[in-house]
Image (cartoon, rainbow, N blue to C red; front, side, top):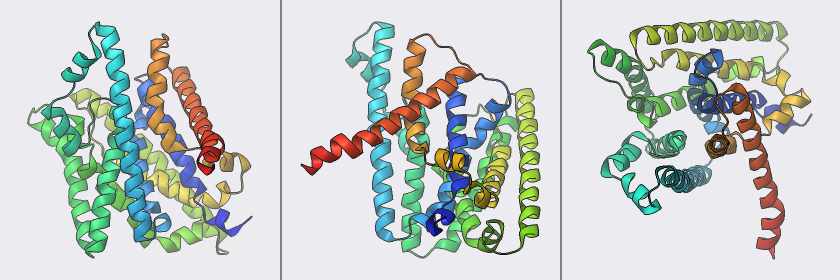
Length: 342
């Protein structure tokens, strides 16, 4: 096995793939069951993984600027495409003109929600892309100004505020909207920083559990510990959701953050083993970002065909999305490559 294959975080790729399915499931599956509960972990895990890989993959200032341009292009282009697509569907269902539908869904309030809370009016799942874009810009500025320690302190404060906020809203009987917490400030930045800390501060643990030393017993102990903690975290998440249902609170977020961190730690711990399995290496190559972006469009088409929410619908949506993403990559390499090359 080549060194570059050993160094690649296949475990994190598998977690990203699992989380991308959870995102599809929360939009296409049933509103009950353990998968619905686990879906709350998906986006937090994405942020943590992005932070973990930030200093490993995006190592130069040029690469960081390129990544910012890439994410901003993806977010803006797909937001416009989704807006047009859902405007067409709305105009057809309501029997009004497309222009009238567009006017009814464009306002100062909606623009402010997008700018301040990363909440697009259509293609709502793209909030993650905009939040990630904001985080990358903030990190770029902070790193240029050498204010890393200040950022860590700020991230801790923002994380605590994001966890406490839903409780306070419930305590004082104030209606809570999830986008007040689910944005770049209270979720994206703190979790991204947690991922970055996991990479920077626990490098010795990462080396140990990935099998680069002879301490196999230590590796087994760490894997078992991370596995047990992950199970405990999932049980805590389920308990937290039960409390939310009793009290009528949308979410308390704490459980999903804990499970997200533990899943990432478990994936790092198992990376050496996962990297040796052909099936996992095959699945790790799937473009989870593409699946995440395109799945809502696929789901809307299946919905127009009369498919109801179910696990089967979620699985079909997931597989079709992956096929379309693979087809697009193939098209880029062949037809578009030859055209541009000519």
